Structure formats: structure tokens, C-alpha cells
Image 1 (tube, rainbow, N blue to C red):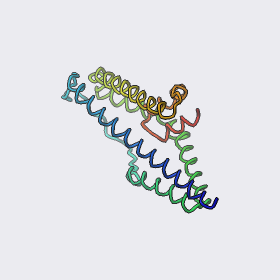
Image 2: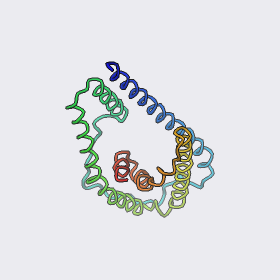
Image 3: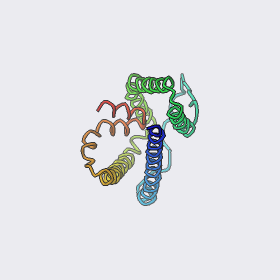
Image 4: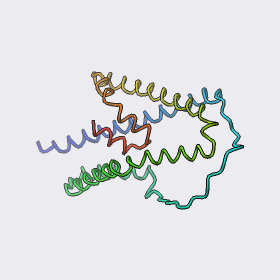
Length: 201
């Protein structure tokens, strides 16, 4: 029985290693497939490279520049090491503090970021309409969006197909609840916002 905590820790570390390897392998394969699709499809699209006739946006009256605290890779490594060290040292206080911090971030995303997003997207499209970019690039924009969505669905089919084979369970039950999380991910490109939408399900 005295070796049980060490055994559980080994299981947790093994699962973490498998999860990280699967995540990075998935990202690598998806990037390679995206690059292949781009090189094979994009050159055949009629994309105008000139910007003549576009109007310039008025000067910005107010700009709020908030630089990131640290690079994404640094934050990712810090979070993994901090989580592992918390498990190793069994510091309950720090673990509760991290859980509270996670809940705080999710609440900020839910109550601040997500309500602001529609306004931000509207302003972005208003600026594109003022410049004249939408009228010139709307057809190619819709074509690219269609290509991206098809790529998403194909890659999701591959991932959930492998997951179903590995777990010997159907992934359709998960996909049935996937709609809100997928729409949030596509609309925000934010993993934190997507996690919030997924938690609601």
C-alpha cells in the first residue's frame, strides 16, 4: 500500500505524456495537411493582389495596447511544470488557488470576453466595408472559409475515428454535443472561450 501514491503518480505522468504527444502529433499532422491543401488549392483561386481603390481608415482617436505577459510557449510550459510540481509536492493550498484562478479566468471569458466579441467582429467588418475590401474580396473570403470548414470536418472525422477505435466506443455521442463549442472555437479562435462553451454542455 505504501507504494500506491508513487504508482498513481506514474499513471498520471503516463497519461499526461500520452495526451501531450497526441496533441502535438495532431497539431503537426493538421499543419502538414493544411499546408498541402494551401499549396494545391490556393494557387487556383482568383485572388486579387492589388489594393488600388481602397479607402484609408480615419486616424485612430484612441488605442489601447495591452502586450502579452509572456509568450504562449512560455505560458504552456509554465502551466505544465506548475501542475506537475503541485502534484509532486501535494500542496493543497496551491492546488486550490490554481483551481480558483482557473474559475476566475473562465468567468472573465464568460462575462467579459464573449459579450464583447460580437461588437469587435462588427467593428472589424465595418472597417473592411469602409475600405472596400469586402466588396472586392468577399467571394474569395467565402471560398477560403468553405475550404477551412471542410478541412475541420475531415480532421474531426479522422481524430474521432481514431479515438473511437482506441476506446472501442462511438464518438458520435460526443459530436452530438459539439455544436456550441465548435461555433465558439471558429468564431473566437480562443481555447479559453471554447472551454467555457464546452463546460456548459
